[in-house]
Length: 94
Picture 1 (cartoon, rainbow, N blue to C red):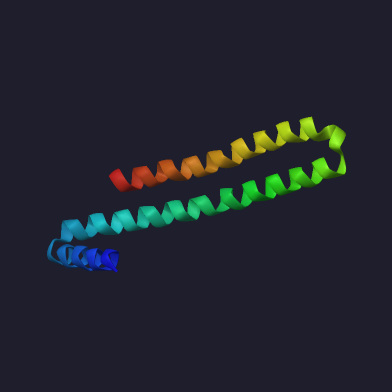
Picture 2 (picture 1 turned 180 degrees about the vertical axis):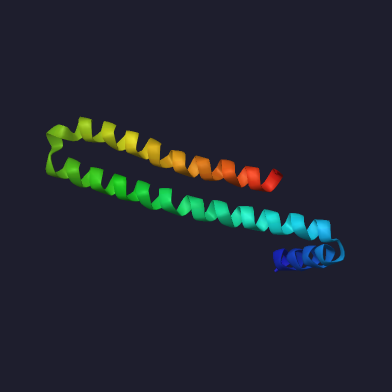
C-alpha cells in the first residue's frame, strides 16, 4: 500500500513539472521495454533446457555433447536479454 502512495505522490509531482513527467514516462517505458525483452530469452532458455534433458534421457551416452551444445544455446539466448538490458539503460539515461 505504501508503494501505491509513493506512486500517487510521484504522479502529483510530475503533473506540476512537465520535465519530470517526461522523465517518469521514459523510465516507465524503458522498464516495460526490458520486461518485454526478457520474455523471449526466458522462454527460449526453458525450451533449450527441456529439450536437452529429453535428449540426455533418450541417449545417455551423448550427454556430454548435448550438455555442451545446451550451454552454447543458453549463452546465445541470454545475449538477447543482455541486449535488451543495454537498450533499457540507453532509453533510461539518453
